[in-house]
Length: 282
Length: 293
Image (cartoon, rainbow over all chains, first blue to last red; front, top):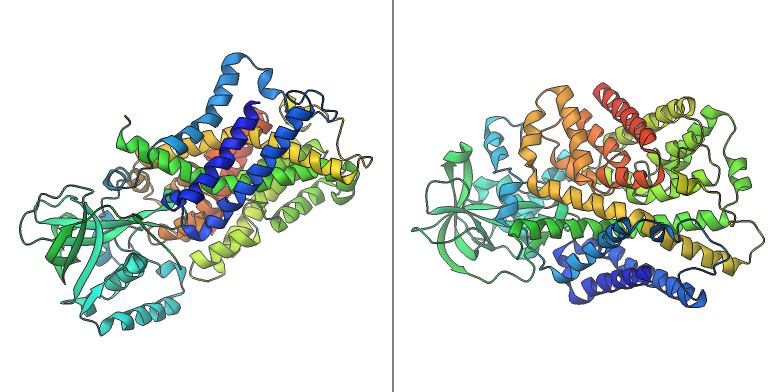
């Protein structure tokens, strides 16, 4: 009987994820078809278990073709049995009832990259960066193909003096800016993100970041840009803001490197977006 | 009620599950299919008697077989129960999740649309699978499955049943398999999520300064992250500038063969002592092999 409930709840859970759209808070929707098909497989398994249960007049009792596993958990001492139940019940309870956390500065801190790799970009070219701050898809393309792609992206922006990065352009746009910082100097750029104080002693500086998701949130990384505000702000880590300013570059002490910085002209607090992550769509 | 970092751990945990469960479901269906439709005679015909040939052909079949490391353990257990020799089953288990069209293609994409990385990845895992299979065939007698799995099934693909009956049997077995494998998947995903939330990746990366150490670090990272073999190439490629090609190959070959999730799932099927040796052999061969690249 327990199995029926679990399968039913798994079916419901996957259905619920898709119906409510919450699935986007866990995975890149490009791969959603996989978990979508899981709904039907779970439903099928549930039906089979229900059918067996009622036909067999009980827990697989009268089944002629008994396999060893059926009564597996019932033969065990009660604590093992409850452990078994607990293991299956936990993700369901956690998935259905716990609030879905959004990856934020806590993860940026605990993953502990602290943007360190950036400092080596200038210093030594071969020791570039992990997937933090600066999106880098160069590895997904051959050297030439990548340059070509970047040129193409650049041409989209080069004539514009004012670039507003929408969420779906965020990763590519950031990457282009980091790739050709010189071409963007002085341009007006605006985008949304959450604040991350980082290690800067200057209260006017903070990072404005987004988490970018490749496959599921377990493989995401934080991307964004340093922003310098005209005056000190009371912004806390994870406050969502919209920033608009001109691109410049500066020597950033904690990284010991020159990095692009957005000199903020206008900004305002925003509500956390419905889709806090940006997704890799290429 | 809960701290923010616990909730984030939880979110990562659920996301790993959402990613892995569809593949596990495919795996358990295939296991159910093998149970009901594949007879021991059919397998005996396919698998050569000669040990070397058996290992080679099993590794080759594994290479053609699209599976993910979450789904392969129940399949292999079922095959061994059906009388496939242990060494052949293991060779199949080791190539299955690494060498298959989906995984190699994602590796190809992740590493700049060049074929050298998929080639190294496929090549090394094939060699490791064959070597480990051969050693196992010398060292271990019997099927090394834990007792409950070793009970003979008196009811399986004996051609007497109707197709519908077999089909129903397949679904029933799939559900059983889901429950027997699922608990380890859940625990494994949770441990992996906890590691991601609380272990600073930078700590690991700092250890990997020398060539040999970096290989060990990447293997450790592969074990801890427990990524699906279809997604891990993208993660590996993000380390490309920091780590040598060899250590990335170590990451890409070791991860799908041994990680937290699938070791826990193996515990459901095989004896502990056997798993210990198996993991040790894989680790040694992957380490040496990747150093040579």
